[in-house]
Length: 467
Image 1 (cartoon, rainbow, N blue to C red):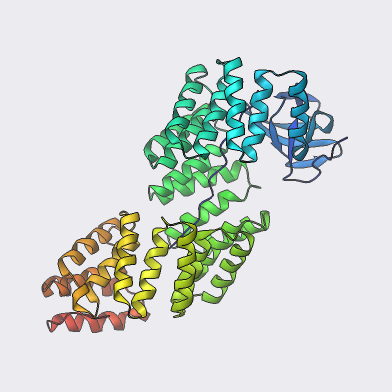
Image 2 (image 1 turned 180 degrees about the vertical axis):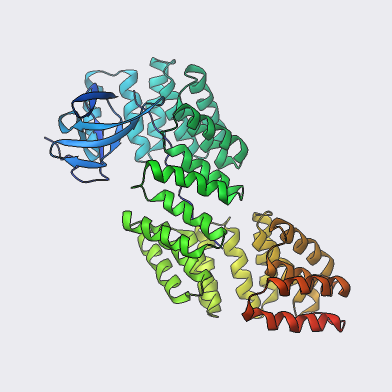
């Protein structure tokens, strides 16, 4: 199973054109302090260079939300104080020629970061820090670039410095949390996101990012709770629905997952991950053709979305189209050589074709890449327990893997328990094989109960199961 989560962008701070006219367009503040108004009152001021997303339009006014790093404010900003995002880089290039200040280098670095011109962005941030080493926002922004480049320790160091300079800078905690999350240190990531939320409970992004961290820790209820909080604050942003759908899939609440993907697609019809996740949910409901169609649309929208190939390969596998499954999983692996699920699914396809050598190689590689993946553990355990070719069987190893898979699923997954029973049978321990096959039968849906009974009869007669 390959579920796509959409991480929020890292948060960048900055101290006559075609303007955004539609909800969802990005605009950039060009006034020194653009006024935010509600009714006739000024409710906030947004410094030059900040990127805002239009949430509503009334004539010359745009409704926006802006986080200062201390508090989140919503209000109307006038078009005279902003410029279309696409025009902003040229605007600030001209500003820098007139006044090469730390503030303007920091702002331009932000736009280079948005364009993924990371080395150019670093050069601007370095110059900004040279000119003003006590500006916390610039350290935070440079940390964003290091994180995007995969230099997580450098990202953390820069965010540390930003926090030393300004201990209440919410963005720095959020971005440091992103770096810890990308390093796989989910506990520290959650701690940083929680501090960002404590500092500004109305700032939505840390809720979604903390939801992602809970998801990776397999605490799906807490993940859903955080996605819910984000959606209450920012209901028009699609990616939290995609994240929540991923958690629903893990909880096997497929109708809820599909509903969330539907909402994400309605908000953003170009969201490839929403199509891919909906395809996975449909595949889990046995809707293989619809799943393939959704994954194909995801691939059309983003040909480099590896998990869309992996999910489509999974649907082909369920349809018994093993060559198509192998082709899609191979493409997923080409895009992401560390995609454990693609290796695992391709291994199953090789097994179905009777190529146990390739199946074993892929199953082992899947487990090497992600030793904590319960699906990979179960698949390898099943091959070791039930392979028709004796040279690939290993009952003891199968029992170890299957036991771990059952522990990770709290002994509530009938499929995992079924594999454990087969493993005990291969190991010659038919007493435990009967015990656990009886338990597997209790969990089995009606369509699977007869298969469970037949295996139970095998184990009672002292015979192992061969798949």
